[in-house]
Amino acid sequence: MVLLVGSAWCVRGQTIVDLSRQGRLGTGTVLPAQCAVGQLFFRTNAPAGANLYACTAQNVWTAEGLSGGSMAGSNGQFIYNNAGMASGSNLSQNGDGSLSAATGFNEKVCAVPFSATLSFNAANCNRFETGTLTANVSSSTITGLRAGQHLKFPLTQDNTGARTVTWPAGFVNMCQPWPGPNTITVQEADVMQDGVTVRGTDCTVDSAASSIGTGYLSESYAVGPTAIVANTWVKLTGGKLAPIAGTEGIYGIAPFACLANAASCEVAVAGQVQVTAEGSITQDHYLIHGTTNPARALDSAQTSQSLICSSARIGGRALASATDGQRVSIQLLSPGMQGAQICPADLPATTRVISCQPGWGDGLNAIPAGTYPLSECLNEFGATWTITAIKCYTDNNGASTLRVQNGASVDLLTIPVTCSNSWAVGTQSGTTTIAAGDFAKFSFVSDGASKQATYVITGTR
Image 1 (cartoon, rainbow, N blue to C red):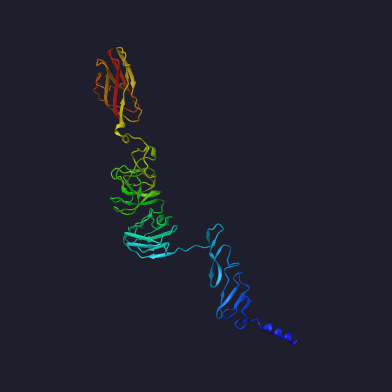
Image 2: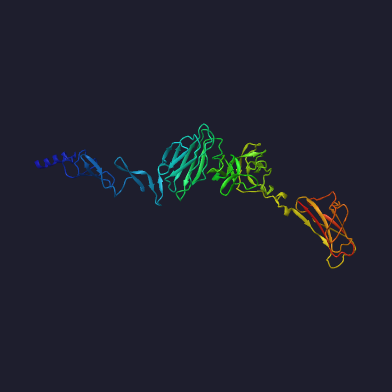
């Protein structure tokens, strides 16, 4: 009995474990307050694989053996050190290898002090908070680019506004800061697969007057030797932008002014943007190049491309009405678009010349003496012909004559012309045109000896 009581006393005495004076391995749910270096403790309520702790310094326990067994967190979660405990993180890998985040990521932001020669380091940041633009940025550079990066560039105008930015080499489709004083423009861009090209993807601004963010797509090119005025038509020649100067194709609209020979200038090529009017503009009418200033927008007075002359270059459709010199919002059309109507002025001079050449006789047998009427030369071109000459040919230089009238029997010659083998030219009367839909009536009087007679009316339309 004495031995049994003594044993019971010993068991009760070990409810407090002091491994500093006990063996090298202990178990329990709570780490002992004291330990000696090298001792181990198996924590029974810890996750499998994270049960074993070692005393790495006097009274200091460190979890061991986290490489195997069941880990903390849910299936696929990445594990992180949570104050000494293994915990499931925000980031998980899906079965297909893609990654998911339970909450949002915070992009790395860098403050970039303003300078006329800005430098960005994409190895450190994705978002570059540039200081207020107090002057134009004449040049900029970027390092540390990685394919697939998404970058952001907030740009703030000062009280003066209208500051511009020259983007680094390799940047394309980038916008310029909205010129309004104290406005903030945010340019977003992606680094392409080559790790060098950076293409603008979005451009927004906080100004209500801005045309940025209203739905237009833009591109950026160098400027030729002629400066570009804001809100005007531009063309693309030899890879450089220039103002429209005549009837050349319209590539788009420059939303901002660009200096001659500038390294980069934005041009809107699709969507909605503003252009400066030449004369009055009516809503929904198609807009073409100006006449006084081809870089401005002129109202075509038409709502259909098919009714606009093919020589006219169409830039867009007016979304509102405007007066001369005002900026008007338009819906841009495809670059290089032109009218579909064939107008007289659209045709080269050689194609506008008309020649109608009917006649009588087979050239072998004499045409018996008599009068031979003939109606010919119907004007089906939809435009008035202006007669430039009426001629008559016969093979015999005889006495055959030709009288010519229009469809209303109005003489087109003062007197009938006597035909000859040198194409005799008649004297025109005061009626010198053949209207659309009208025709010519010929009356040939044969001398009985002519074997062939040819009548010629030439003109223009």
